[in-house]
Image (cartoon, rainbow, N blue to C red; front, side, top):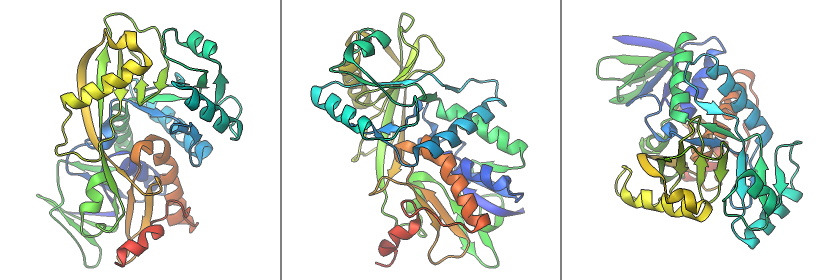
Length: 367
């Protein structure tokens, strides 16, 4: 069978589905192909945070206001279509574990222009009032706008919503060949998709293709573990401290993440990863770590770039070929906003932000 579409997107994760959403709003036909299933890659984590205060100093993330508005609005839109609760606006606590860390976090906050109420400095006593028993030295940050998301469930609901909007979704079909004659052809095991435009949004697999193997992308394996407490948890917020603790809508469980493995020889979760996560938990909530049981583990491979910004844009040589990759650990925060941004680029001829434009990588393409 030969299926024709205006846009074909390879990858059904955060990048691919966000792009599909924007394209469908412009009244074009869209097909998404994934060799596995929706959220099968790094986007499928069971616990993620929308956290605009990143890094050890809690620096305000790039385009924080626009990115937060885009993802918060989209989460609410998709949640209204789903019977499964996949996200909570439950706030985020960032305790400092060392005096030096507290000093740097406080200084960073004081010199940063935050929207009213987004990022509040709390003393050590105030932090411990919010969360009794937590390790804290000299204070920390409270972000009441922090969101906790089961990303895998979100993307499953997102795909269902987009199919109702007209998306043609093909899963479990790995492209055998991609070539161009009068349009882009994607040969699948039992069909061929013909598309005017093709997008590569396959995470770690994007730069493994001959078209994008020149992209400066680093692969980082991340493991998370879901823990269950024998007693109801005493807190309902999430925590960012030596990794993160994502607190879903469950009184007994939470997700601890994440490892940052630059050198790895397999893609599966393992005992070493679990012990690493437990060690980090002990630094923040030692009494909790002693009692919780590991009930599940997950692993995925994220793509990162030298400037820690995603890569988005058209191929320098192949017409109507595009890429969206390098979301790293900020896929939730960046994905929808940047998809909207690329929609403006395609349909309104606006310029791409230099920080994310694929043009910044062209020196690699010419080598």
